[in-house]
Image (cartoon, rainbow, N blue to C red; front, side, top):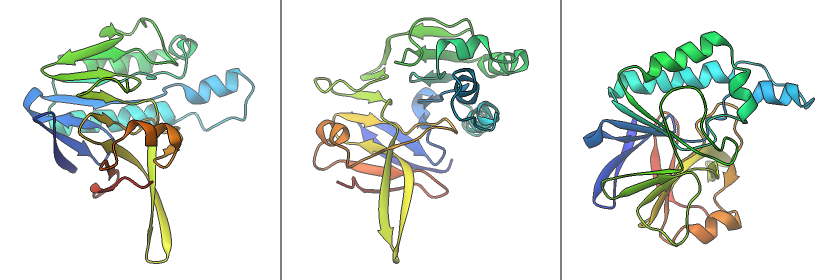
Length: 220
């Protein structure tokens, strides 16, 4: 697996280059902020249109991670859909694809701010989920520890060899892990933003996604 191993709450986890989090001991893959159906939603609301291929691309990358890892549990950390109507507008073949990905696996949909409440696509729908000593939720709670969340779409920018590189990134400290957005058409919030600065400890690391995930001090 193309990833960076790290220890969090006495647990070994892997930040994958794709933006997914892998927990080998639990045979678990966690992804956040898929925002499936974003192009359809923008077209429906009369916004500037996007090429309607993001759902296929996002699901293809999830499928690839599942095949490589052999994961038996999938946690989607909220904002899996750009809104509730995007689920209804989804082509039948896409719904079948999601059902096929769920087959033989425990699939957990965590509610997000874009997709609150249950959706009719199988799996289990929860506000948050706890396993062993880790809590999975959509938005980080500054008063909690040992939590894994998403929502903020973190990204980092580094200057190297006279140019800057910006990539989606995991943010990691002793209290929490914030996942990057996994969806193809998702923007990002720089790690220097006040919202992320206030959540992450001074010694936090960022693990940049891409072909060779690598940890760097969280840019501030």
